[in-house]
Image (cartoon, rainbow, N blue to C red; front, side):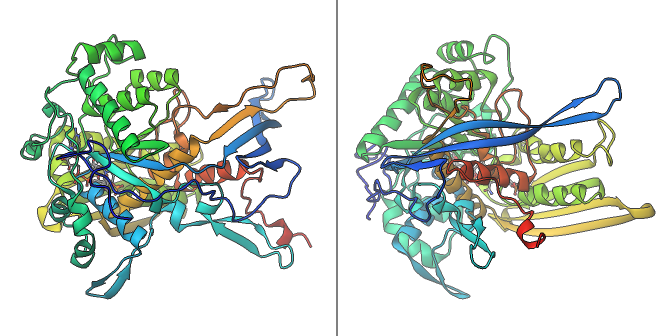
Length: 549
Ligand SMILES: NC(=O)c1ccc[n+]([C@@H]2O[C@H](COP(=O)([O-])OP(=O)(O)OC[C@H]3O[C@@H](n4cnc5c(N)ncnc54)[C@H](O)[C@@H]3O)[C@@H](O)[C@H]2O)c1
Ligand SMILES: O=P([O-])([O-])O[C@@H]1[C@@H](O)[C@H](O)[C@@H](O)[C@H](O)[C@@H]1O
């Protein structure tokens, strides 16, 4: 469907603009039905009772041994089957990721095919776990062979072809010119989407120069008045969200930060440590409140889920507390697209194989504007943190290889080399101790076309975050529950959507809860939560049906 040049945030002359599609209230869960007394389908909902089985471990004071006790907790899940007309607003829409994901959605919606040096290429959603992967539903009743189904078909999810896209940027460049500036897409594809992209102009945004590299100043020609936090900025962003929603007749809007990496904000008692202090700090124009935190606060107050695709500490304690108080959803941080995604799988493999990893050297160079921004030390430091902490959980889980506090040497280097553009080079060396004093050295040269890897993650983050807003839970009644007891109310997942961690380098988790970076565990959590919502047990690779006969 043609883009709505008049629709979208900042509609009207010189306003934003969005790509819109018919969208529909179609139900996306017609792939299979679960035949179980614990699962009930109504017109609007899937109701399931799920028994969550865990093992509680305590140490016996007398013997020092662990005592492991199986536990079972029954939950009721309710999934709203009505697929809403959904929009996504990107902060940093005119950037490499923003233009690439927008063109990609247009190309998929129209089923475009374009010429390249290697011959024709068709639009696809490769790299999206939701649109490009499957999960094991079960085993065939007749042949006992695995039956795998598309991930997107497990729950009634929004289809990305139906997403309406808009956004903000401190650069006023329309998305066709910005697409050229990004130098990510093939000319053949750009030619097919140019007219629609040219009609899309980012809304003006807030710009507080101290938070991003000084070299970004030459882009900042589309900024709102004021160079530090204020409530007027919060209210303007909220109004932009409402305008976008109304102009495109949306039921829901998801907002994502894919703007430049900011420096960390200092966490200061009395400023951003609590929800009320943060709101007061914004009111007072405190210089330590970043643009991304202002966007987060605006989205929280507007009830629009907000996901941070960059590594800065957008979610200062006050922002998380505000999200919890408002019952709003947030997620982050920092898309896990290439070098780090590989690391979170490889380190998991090495350590869980009993190989004692002793050093990781991660070097990368890139030539896009992200690299230019990261050439500034304070912005690099934000990225260094998110790229370094990704091994912590896997190391801490193996006390056989590592004493408490021990960990591999780990260094991260990022250099800006304009010549390679968006095609980042990631060079890694993994050095490990193996049997009887041996060593294993793994050297990887990984060319990541950064925006083509990150854009499907932006889509996944929208689709999963939106799906999570339609899933509610409650503790199931127990034998002790009497008929006269009031029916317990359903409620949403915790405001911090740690289920998004598979797509993120530095997963934000509810305060005080553990961070999981191991890629396989992250995917298992996402998969098995979706399975539980339709009353299915977690995926088990025991395949006893092929062992016990
Ligand atoms: N593979 C990847 O591309 C990848 C992976 C992980 C994280 N990221 C992060 O995603 C972000 C975007 O990456 P990119 O390659 O698209 O970068 P980019 O520099 O091409 O795009 C960022 C855009 O944000 C805009 N911007 C800056 N400050 C803004 C503000 N306050 N409000 C609105 N717009 C603003 C800039 O003008 C620019 O157009 C970066 O923070 C990057 O670190 C990217
Ligand atoms: O996910 P990943 O490929 O390790 O991370 C990438 C880094 O390697 C790159 O240097 C940076 O510019 C990108 O924003 C992204 O963060």
